[in-house]
Length: 390
Image 1 (cartoon, rainbow, N blue to C red):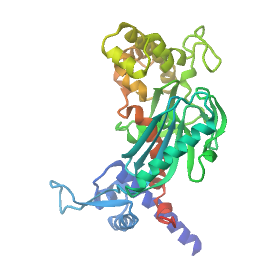
Image 2 (image 1 turned 90 degrees about the vertical axis):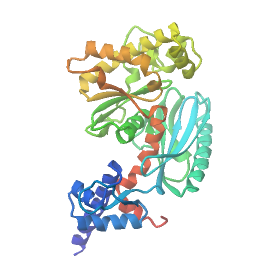
Image 3 (image 1 turned 90 degrees about the horizontal axis):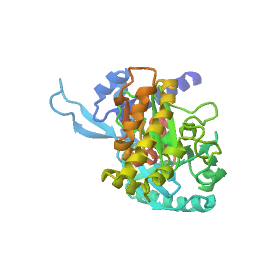
Image 4 (image 1 turned 180 degrees about the horizontal axis):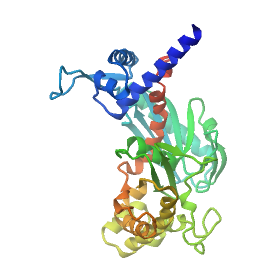
């Protein structure tokens, strides 16, 4: 009997997650449409929906819109209050924190400039903890309860998902971020991985399950989504596109090698080549037709295309998604990227349209971090329902 009851409880937990994820994929569904989508009976779905409503994970939005066949059902959506996720980002020149709700909507955000290169990690993390505390307080005023915090970092993260093994552009080695931020559910993740997950979950790409996501600030990172999942590699370090050599006799890179992509298309290399002081100044100069800015971006696009062509030939993805700060520069970068891919990708069916620009832009990493925390509730709503302090 115990075994049978345990199996029934496990089945119920799985079905609760099925219903919640169906609503995450499409709002304003009714009990009947959910039942058809997930393959459960309407009676079973009604029971599960009632439980999710009572737990504050769903909300009703009134009768379904006119034009549907038969008697209209009650439209359902994920709740705007209740569980939420905190995302934090440690950049070379800034710190940022945001909160998203169960729907993935950005509810509050705070950012401050900070020169973090070579700065003691303890000082950076103390400032970040203060920023997290302020944003969490703001979220509480919106009746949101953060279930965890994910910290995005520009470096290699250990398999414990709490330690930064190496972040060259920060000067960090073996930094225990999770412990430094104090009690709570804290996970550390590479920023490029989070940018890719944000595109998968929130980017609005219909049926895009296999893609390479590339973004850049001081360094250049890439991440791989394969069959709808993040591909980490054997040791968790997949996606180091910035250190793929595009000209082996090129400049010395921070990693110790020569001619890495980062030395041609990283933020510092771009600003230096364009004679611009900031990324915003670079974009303004390019938009104004400045020859140095346009030439710098064209050269960076060419180098990026060379590196990406190897990834495309190796992995055969559906698309390449350009995100982060690179998305702001896409009008001047992408012609070079597409030209190199057209010349180098062996599959001649590859099209320029297969290189797409992120709609999330600079906030992609931060929103991906926050949403990765709250997605735990979508994956296991029963755990949230039975949390004593809820």
